[in-house]
Image 1 (cartoon, helix red, strand yellow):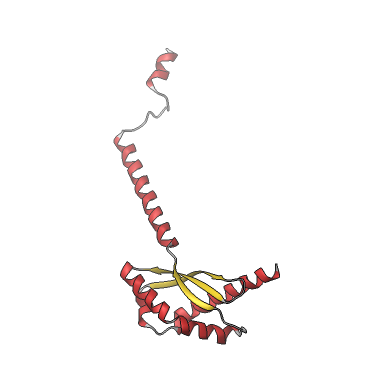
Image 2: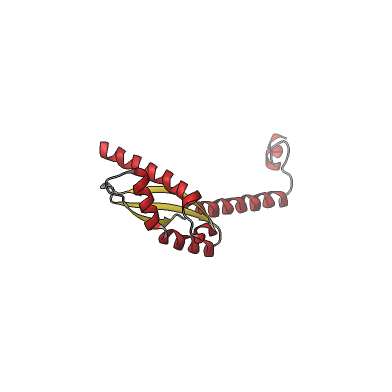
Length: 142
């Protein structure tokens, strides 16, 4: 149980440090093509490997360029993590594109479009009876 807490703590530290490196440490111009943010970090139980999931806001061309820049900077990031975290062995760093936010935006767009279509259909059908009843209800009362 203590091992998993340590892995979680190391993952949180790596996420914080890589976020800081994205802001001021990585000088590669390709990384600046899209708005890059770290969404999550997965560290192996033996602390030897680490996947850094990044979300890149921009066009698909910007994503490809930024990912190429991040892959090229992975050696630099590993070195900086080793210096900053002072671990016995620094994990191998792999950047992975996280499409979760992109998919979420797509779903939200679809929901908004469906809501707009529903409103249009409601407006085309005309106003509803303010009393809430139907003609068949009023006929039975008479």
